[in-house]
Image 1: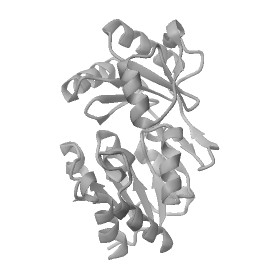
Image 2: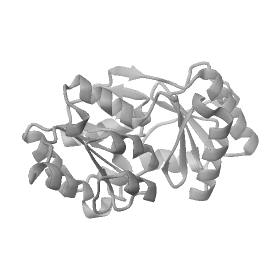
Image 3: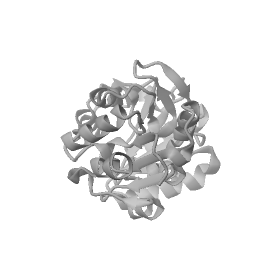
Length: 267
């Protein structure tokens, strides 16, 4: 078995349980791996400001990959990579969502922008513990390119329909991924978790064969496929399980701790 030197962890549905906390078993296993010299990277679709507290709780000192690979920051917030959407593509998307009457929010300079405060906005900011900027009618015509757009849908069927429509319209000008059943995320086509993880591993002098990546959703497919050991959570989408080398217990059953023990601590 290849010696694992770097562990990449998704947050929601993976490292975090359903209450959005890090289970103690996961925390212990990850910290023990780091004490043995294994590097750990958080690789998430979340904003950096929503991610940094989890990196701090684990004691992760390396780069944080956020926005599905569209941004990499040091733990102090210094941006070391940023690939936002094309501004005209973003404006076109915002207009489409407005015409369709679908909820969408925008992320610019690690701040959340919304047109107005409504139930979807309140739910999101309460769940992810972030602030928001209300842009009003200027929301659909940003002057700065967003890092990401996110549409909140009514469930997986609508998410798939939205993804298919947007992908058909924009083709290779856009990377679209479903991060949970009702989140459709849109980024620059150069942004994905797998490529950014490969960049980080290379900068650390670590080959991808020595990387373990753990995730649960469609936006984790690239990193799970590229890693030497790709682990899907028991609560993963079926497409993610099919791409993985192994399947861990669910995020409510300390699946990350299981993977770290199996492939690092007991290997």
